[in-house]
Length: 122
Image (cartoon, rainbow, N blue to C red; front, side, top):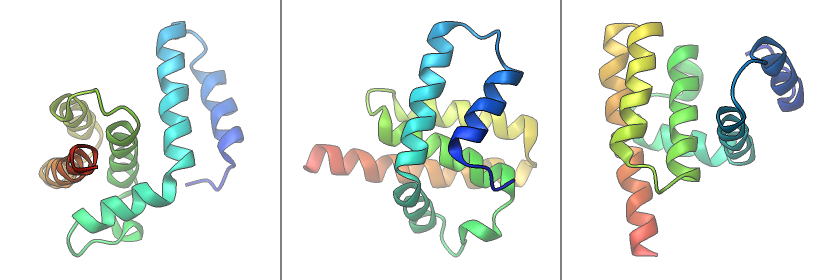
C-alpha cells in the first residue's frame, strides 16, 4: 500500500517483530518469498475466483489477506486447504468486516480447489 519495495517491507516488518522464534521467522520469510515471486499469478487466481471483483476494488485488508492465503495455498500444497482458510478467516474476523469473512472463505475455497486440481491433474 505504501509503494515500498519488498526488501523495504521485509526490513520494516522485522524491525517491529524482532522477537519471533526462528521457525516462525523462517516460515514468514518463505511465505513472503512465494507471495512476491508469484504476485501476478496470485492476483490472477484471486480475480478469477472472485466473481465480478477486481483487486483494486477490494478492501486493502481483504485483498492482502487473500494474497497471503493464496500464496500459502500455492507455495505449501501439503498444508490442508481447510487449515489455510481457517487461519485467514480468523484474521478476517479480527481485522475486516463480517461480510468479508464469507467473501474470503468462498474465494479461497475456490482458489484452493483449483490449485489442487492442477496438482492432481498434472
